[in-house]
Length: 173
Image (cartoon, rainbow, N blue to C red):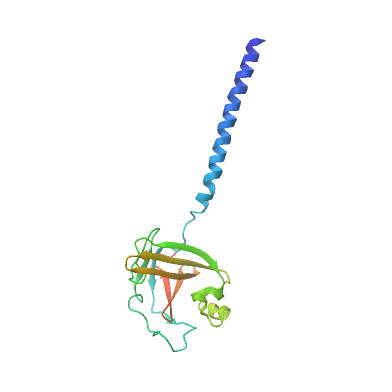
């Protein structure tokens, strides 16, 4: 009957529109998925208390002093999504963060004399180490520091022949 044929034609047309809308939605979702995947939570964000540190395993007695630096030792460092604060050494209103995974040979700019053994003595349990690189370009100069993560609540900073340990102030659950 013509009424049934008309209803079928109408339904096919509506079905085509629905399919087109669903296809367009799927394309949009796929386009935004990689951008959202790249916005994973930064495990380094939060507040960290800096201790006095230890002499770096690479220090041979020459070069800058290995004594604790009062501009960093004892300070609290805060990493937020866009800035670093708390110590003049890391303070930056517009921090640039890069997170990567390295092996012991690349820790502390490749300065460990015996990378695997020295990394283990510093507390690293894996040969795949998560590192936060913090950069800052400002009117007072450029800064770039690396913070390798020993565990969820401990990161290190190698600076002026010293390795500072930073403990998270609010430990992760």
